[in-house]
Image (cartoon, rainbow over all chains, first blue to last red; front, side, top):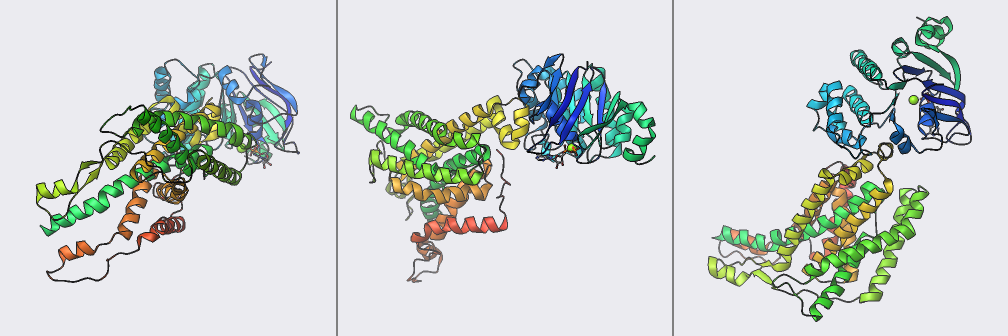
Length: 235
Length: 336
Ligand SMILES: Nc1ncnc2c1ncn2[C@@H]1O[C@H](COP(=O)(O)OP(=O)(O)O)[C@@H](O)[C@H]1O
Ligand SMILES: [Mg+2]
């Protein structure tokens, strides 16, 4: 069984279900990627795994424990970290304050963790006193990831971390994400840049209308002609 | 010589009163802006909260005066203010528990909150009149003047005098201290930063493990303290009359909005902008003109842009202009 597993999740925001029997999981030290068309329910699946949306059916297991009943901040305490798709930084606060807020639940000294984030994203050290809202898109995403890393999560969930950044910055971010995975962190990530993301994925999930359409290794999905035609722009 | 007289005249009737009134408005607007930034509604009960805090302070001041405790030359009210703050904090938290919390849990829209706060305003207004009465209350004691106009004239040999009332000095100094403390709290303490984070991005704050109930609690404590200080300083400087605090609501909201509602720096700037606008537009410049005009000039009018009766209209006009031209205010408000 996976380290983090959202199992047969069914639910939505109101009367209508968005997710239908959707299952998503990831192992420690591995990268799992969710791809699919706009509105497929990728963000919804992430929110469901993080407890930001009620489930009608299914459960979320983390490190062998059923966390379905826990509130998001309780899941943070357990060792889960989440970078939402939008509004994922405190725009009026400085880079360093964003990191401090990421560590809010911790009572110990956080200076080492801040230094680690600066090692991972050196540009942030330079911009530490600048409000996050004044940074470029790529830098903002780095702040967002850095904020989530401040609790040293065992699983890091990223909803479109490369949205709106240039291809060069995207490669940069992917490299950093691989680096984080090497520290034995489980990474669950939604990506619009499906091809590049599947290239670094151990496991890939193709979601369509809240259903698991395909689930396989990243490599296998990239080789699957049906997936290529429908979801990877035919190349 | 004439120029010095003009400067003294303006200092005495514009600058000192402007700084005083501006400080009072700034403290009031800070309270409004904190509620808006964290609890996300326009708190119409803020004027009454100021009156309530001032009222408790007055009651304690009378008690102290009766037992002949004083801090000469400072007004006794300063000694009573901590008690006023404490009681107002408790009252405000009680109001939150009884009234606002219900709507917060239901995630009511800001308009509902606004209307609820109007209800609270009427309730508090009634309560205050019931306890202390609708009339004027004078509770100032201690030394009246730090600098007397007559002494100033004698020392400088000028025609015009500059005076500084104790209440004016106390108001300005207290405002500076309170604002410095507030900014230190918001920018340098963990709790203060968590308040700013919550105001900036509620969802992300929750995801970071920031407890919203604690943020709300701290906010009300700060708001009650600011309101009590503002209300007491205004009462010391002018006089305490419950009705006046309801009227103050307009310039206070104008201050908060001009600066950018939700932005504390904006609230302070807005307070002084409104105060000086009111004074500059309603000041009678006749004597200034007489000093500067050639000898023998005669002027029948007061040389005034607006009569003092129109004072309140000044805030209103500025408010409307800002809302049309730059609705986010000078400092682009929204978050703390
Ligand atoms: N907060 C919300 N309330 C109601 N419906 C929503 C909300 N967020 C998303 N939806 C709907 O849920 C569906 C899936 O959205 P989402 O999970 O954001 O898709 P994706 O991330 O795959 O693009 C869409 O039809 C969207 O309109
Ligand atoms: Mg999405």
